[in-house]
Amino acid sequence: MRRVPLALLFFAAAAGLADPAARAQPKDNVVDETFRTADGVELHGRFSATTKAGVTAGNAPVVVFLYAPGSGNDMTKGDWGTLTKELNKEGFHVYQFDWRGHGKSTEIKDTERFWLKSPYLNGAAGSGAPNTFISGWQKKPLKDKISIKEVTNATRFYPSYAMDLAAVRYQLDTKNDNKELNTSSVYLVGTEDAAGLGLAWITMEWKRPATKPGDNQLAIAGAAGAARYDFIGQQLRGDFDEAGQDFAGAVWLSASRPAAFTTTTMKTWASNVAFAPQLRNNTPMLFLTGDRDSRGKTDAKFYFDEVLVGEPKKGSPLAPLKQTFVRELKGGGADRGLKLLGNKEVNAEDTILKFMKEVQKDRQRTASKVRKYENSYGVNLKYFGLVP
View 1 (cartoon, rainbow, N blue to C red):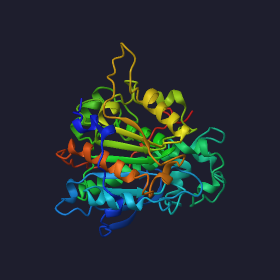
View 2 (cartoon, helix red, strand yellow):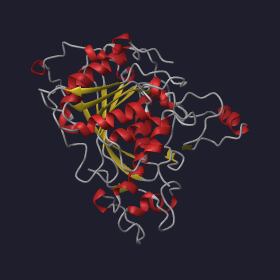
View 3 (cartoon, rainbow, N blue to C red):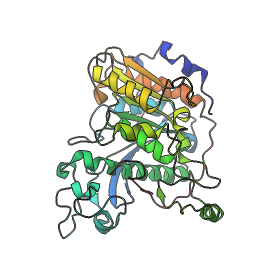
View 4 (cartoon, rainbow, N blue to C red):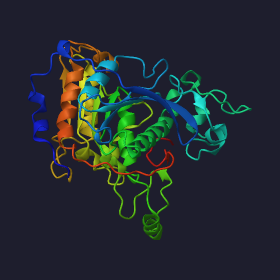
């Protein structure tokens, strides 16, 4: 079990947060880029490098922002900028991206793969595969654009965002191997439904080798009856470090429960030995809600009590969580998600930053690994209970 920083045990009593009026505004160091999912969609991302003096880029952790998918949403909406600058100033890189069909992530670069040859997203008409819930999916010639506005059933389409997360991880690992950041410490900040996606992502990564398996590892895995690890969602056989270990911490703003994920499915991720029971102790989390957001409080309690089993019943093999917290933001009122950012009275940025800095004290000597992956993994959505 990973050591828990002592300061985290007293996080609730932390005081003396920085005055937002005194914040310095460091010079931006931002790069826009594109990358491709395993099923052929071109995603747009934005990398904001740390501006802290003396920090070696290849050793610095990265924070990934996840907004809630939905019509009208993209990575430019809301005040992510203040949090980005504060994180950059304190030695964290920041990565943002647009989900498929959102913002500029609308191009399908490999139409054959997307519509006809993606083994985990496609199927016969009426099969319930996510791609069949895009208007005009069966038409010829094959469409080379995708828009969230053309999705006929957002709930059934929702699981396909897991493919985007796998592509983000590949993009980050590529930057890791180029010594631009260190994917041995990845943090997440997600709003509302993105909490469900983020937890699904961490769970999936516990079923993927952290570095590309070598021939000897594949031979051992093959002898044990395992597949060759060409997609996410397989029991690991042999001497592998799981990629899930790289998730250093997560903060969820008004975490909500996606309609696409059943309660039964979500409750298996962190407690079922077949998925990611290590997630509970490896990844400290902070659930933040407005102080008058009754729905947010209820959903945060669901995640803490039922998904993460924060306080196990007597006799349970699980230990109580001491590094994951549910906290109210004074002055947040009934505001949800992105509305909690950019408000000087609420000071959500300072709370997030303090939490991450405390966690990073325990991770700062975590060495970078050469990942060596050559392409993004596909995701077996059915393996994780994300599609029927």
